[in-house]
Image (tube, rainbow, N blue to C red; front, side):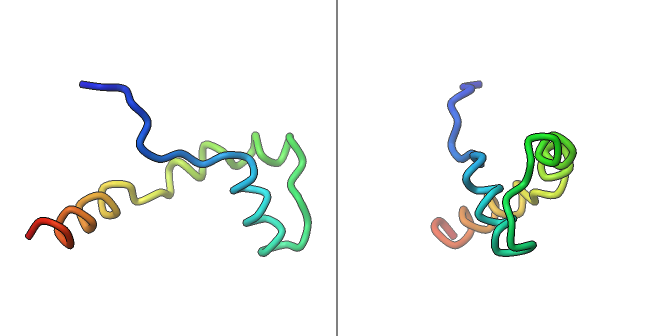
Amino acid sequence: MSKKIIYQLVLDDLQEAAMQTINRKLTLDEIETIKEKIADRIEWFDAISGVIRENFE
């Protein structure tokens, strides 16, 4: 299997969400606190299978 990255989140994505949600940027400590929790909440399989179905069924 290839390890090529198809999509990823960057710090700017987190900071943009923070600004829109709590009206401020996150500290590095706050980012460390939430980064694993973000990965646990991303419904990656549903997103991928939905796009596959929309385009190839």
